[in-house]
Length: 307
Image 1 (tube, rainbow, N blue to C red):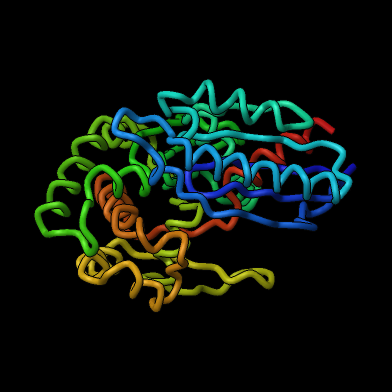
Image 2: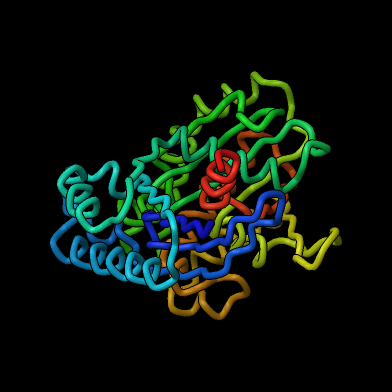
């Protein structure tokens, strides 16, 4: 069976194709993405404008065309916060559905958190014990905690790096007052989540996934020894805190010269770094481990379990 996962997210339209073999490592045979940064196309009332819709549909058409060329038997298509929460989201979803060969799943924030947790659990294994998994996307922050493959706690907040950049960081580089206000907003929004997570048993490992955390770890973290060919990364909250004010003083175009900062993340990495720092400090995390698997792998693994 040839299986595809199409993730229509806040930053990218991302297609992964895998040849399914029971018991085998799900290595992608194809991995293609188109960077959109949908948050930049939102109007004042929260709708995706016509330019954004056209760019989104073009990317979806391209992904569908590639899936057909690759003779994919089934495509799992997921939509996350940017389209889900747009005021014209239902109309946009109808346009996307009309272009697909299969079904479209609109994931809630809690479902995103649970699938990402599954991916981290499978990557790290049962020996990792109780996991706390953090994921900063373009539109939202997901947090999940548990000891099994289904988390005991799965939470989502509208603290995505793209969303906060659009609403709070109007200048490039951001003004000191903008950064101060953003930090206060993030801290206030996190307060109930922090209280809930800290009321649970303490995790054995704190794990972060997805591109924002991976970029920050390559900038402010360290490579550590591990089993296999993949580079393993950890990041301390103290080193991240040292980097946040420095990042905020550098224009977006120049941030791409820093290790780990890619063109599609450079405009929103400051907001992502503030969220990362505040959630780690709020949860009293000193060291976070970076997991290369996230939402797409979680969706793939869940489907493989059903095959």
